[in-house]
Amino acid sequence: MSFKAAKRLDGVSESATLKLNALVQAMRARGEDIVNLTAGEPDFPAPEEAKAAIRRALDENKNKYTPVAGIPEVRERIAKKTNVQQPNVVAAHGEWKASEVVVTNGGKQAIYNAAMALLNPGDEVLIPAPYWLSYPEMVKLAEGKPVVVETKAESKFKVTVEGLRKALTPKTKLLILNSPSNPTGTTYTRAEFEAIGKWLEKEAPNVWVLSDEIYDRILYGQDPFVSFLDAAPALRNRSITVNGLSKAAAMTGWRIGWTVAPAELTQAMLTLQGQSTSGINSLAQYAAVAALDLAEEKFAEMVAAFRRRRRMALEILAKAEKLKVVPPEGAFYVFLGIEAFVKPGEDSMTLSENLIREAKVAVVPGTPFGAPNWVRISIATDDDTLKKGCERLVSFFGG
Ligand SMILES: Cc1ncc(COP(=O)(O)O)c(C=O)c1O
Image: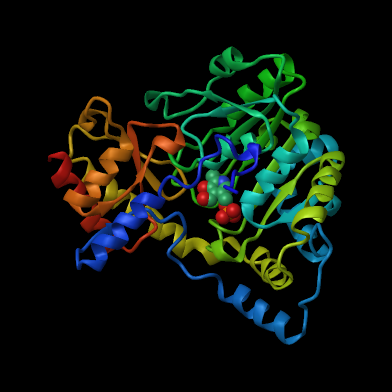
């Protein structure tokens, strides 16, 4: 009997970069020197305090099941962090409570839980493009319908109220925002978030917002981080804030993420999580407590390195005149417009393959991010590798 996957997986993409990774591996095995600029995680170690905490937790046998929503110590710290980032929400509605936090297996499960608990079949989800590639796939898994809202590089890839208004229908249930963004580095200002918030308040009273804030610490401008809800506190009871320790605390493999959401939705997500994955790894939660207790200065070195590398990459890449570069305002990627180099019938997938074969640089194609004429490079790699990779790109694209 031949196997046929369940219908709910129809049209859901597997990782689009697998084929390219296989090509990089094969070429490296032949002794080729390929510069890899695909990393989606900081090249910094996890904080020592988190490492010490996980060792201690292990020694103290804190390795039993935990509450599905997470241990109280970690939920309390997450509520506190959210209250600090959302003072206007606190002023208007009171503090977020630990009971409104669910600790999840990375930011990824946080978004998945929200989609599964919120969407009914056919519900539409507005996703500004370029988007983090898992959003549409998760919406499809939840039997919702992704509705992509295009943005322009000239407007720094920011979605406008006008664009959202055009995409709104009676079936719209959710809007996903991501600032700073993967893959573009786009970071919304308070005023821009306020405008979106006002529009939602007035014209879209039944639409929820999921704000993915996983890159909150990694910013390049002068302005402090703005959490969406802080700019739109009236939406407190129809918003989900997603965050985690993967990017901002360099703890990707520890799988610590969370949702902060109104009590009823939190309860629904807990039912889902309780019957699927349960609470996350107990030891990682004790490490999370330690990481959440760290002062901002602990991460200054990492953020300074990203800032330095960003400047260096932008300086080198500026030499390739036909390459479009939108300087990122946050996160650790640079998005490159390759339209001038794409042959008819091809897109960033083909070009990325050519880059590996000819320029010996691996990048991430923009196609699965909803941007077929763009590629993403990561600056989360050491300065020498980044320099070499950018120089190869300039040679390929023409200085
Ligand atoms: C925008 C965005 N959201 C969420 C995630 C998921 O993070 P995690 O590794 O914590 O699941 C990522 C990871 O690449 C991301 O870039």
